[in-house]
Image 1 (cartoon, rainbow, N blue to C red):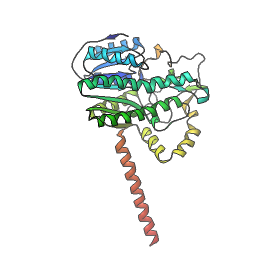
Image 2 (image 1 turned 60 degrees about the vertical axis):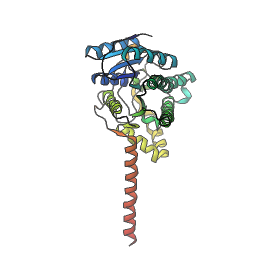
Image 3 (image 1 turned 45 degrees about the vertical axis):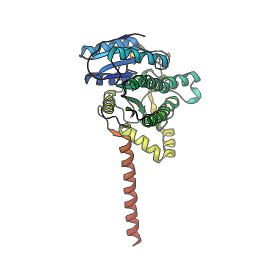
Image 4 (image 1 turned 120 degrees about the vertical axis):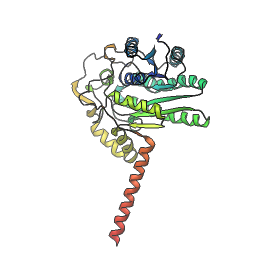
Length: 338
C-alpha cells in the first residue's frame, strides 16, 4: 500500500472504488467543492492519475491502493488517509464487482468474489469509517446502493444478492446508531443504470456483450451529484432516477408481474448485438488498466440530469395516490348506486 497527499482545508471525504466510473465522478465532485478527498481502489496508476488531475485543479487529495475485500487493508487505509488529510468526516462506499451469468454458469469462487467486493467491501469500509468517526464523535457514511437492492434481475444474482445484503446491514446499523444516540449518520443512495466501464470489464458468461438493463441510462456525473446532495442533507435514503422509483414501487405492488416481465425482457435486454470477445479481459480478480475511466460506452444514450427523491417521500406519495384512487373509486361507486 502507498499513500500520497498533503493537508489543506475542507471536509475529509473518503471514496472507495474511486479509480473509475461513479467513484471517480464522486471524488471529483467533492474535490470541486473544496473538500479534501481520500481515494481507495486496487489500481494504483489510476489513483495516481486521478490525484494528479484533482491537484492540478487546485484540490487536495491522497490515495491508498488496496482491495476493499481486505478488512485489515481498509482499516490501514483509513489510518493512512486520516494522517494525511485529517479526521474523516464522510466515507462513501462505492466499490463493486459483478458477473453477468445465469446461476448455473457461475463458479462458486466468482460468486464469492462479487460478494466480498460488493457487500463485504461496504461492511469493512463502514467498520473502518466508524473506528475513526467514533473517536471524533461525528461523521456520515454513505452507501452506494442500487434499485437492484429491492428487485433482483436475471443474469446478476451475485450482484443483486450483495445489494440486498447492504440494505439489511445498513438498516441494522442505523438502528444501533440511533439506540446509542450517536451523531454519526448513515445514508443509502439507490442508483439506476449508469454509463460506467463496468459493462466493458465485468466478467461475462453470456454470448453477447453486456449492457445496462432497462431504458434509462445516466452519466456518472449526474449520479455523483446525488451523492453530493446526500452528504449535504444526510437523508435516510435517496432514490435516484425515475427507473429506480418505478422498479422499487413496482416490486412492492406487483412482484409476481415483475418476475414475469423480467423473465421475458431482462435477459436479452442486458445484451448488445456484439458477441463477447474471445479472451475478453475482466476485473473480477485483477484490475484492467486501460479501462479505468469515468464514462463507459453508452454516452450516446446516457442522460446528464437525473431525478432524486427521498425514499420516505416516494413512499408517502404512492400511499397518497393509492388513497386518492380508492376515494375517487368510492365516489364513483356511490354515484352509480344512486
